[in-house]
Length: 112
Length: 113
Image 1 (cartoon, chains in turn blue, purple):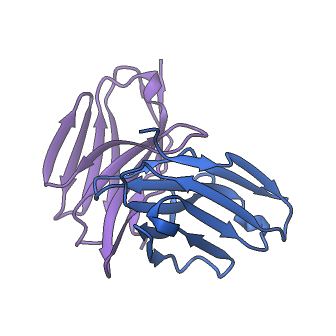
Image 2 (cartoon, chains in turn blue, yellow):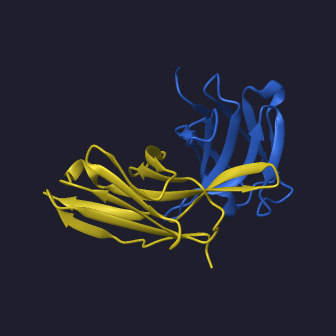
């Protein structure tokens, strides 16, 4: 068990570019979550997968955001046409049942 | 009304004192409650969870839950400088076959040597 792995750790991109982040959950965990956190705020829910099914997507997410979890293993989060307001820490978490999440180290996105 | 509310602090206590962190939530149907610790620049780390009314103790940490008042708290006894961090309260919210944790903004705790 190597924990939840996220790549890259940091990403700097120009406004208007597309970015993709990857999350590898703990292997036996069937639940996977994406959150976004900005300075001084708690993590904000983005989306939830149980196995390969995306069961919930936050209403706060625009159509520029998409997430996948093919075969119920790793997940990717893509942001198209990035905006400066997308700058944040993107956190992935996984769990087996509902006993609390294990978070990855996060991907810090800076849009310039 | 925000779903999970915490005093943002900062809360400052001397080393060895008891730190008390509070959280209220809006969804009466919530059944499980979590406290995470987050050091600056790091991701949240689970320190305690509680499901039943009353107290739950784990070492220097005690979580308290009062579902009637929709109130959760975390007490840290014998506070140490290494406890200085932001503490996030999280509440499980289930709806339509999905469930997720909803987080408060966090309370920043500083323990002074």
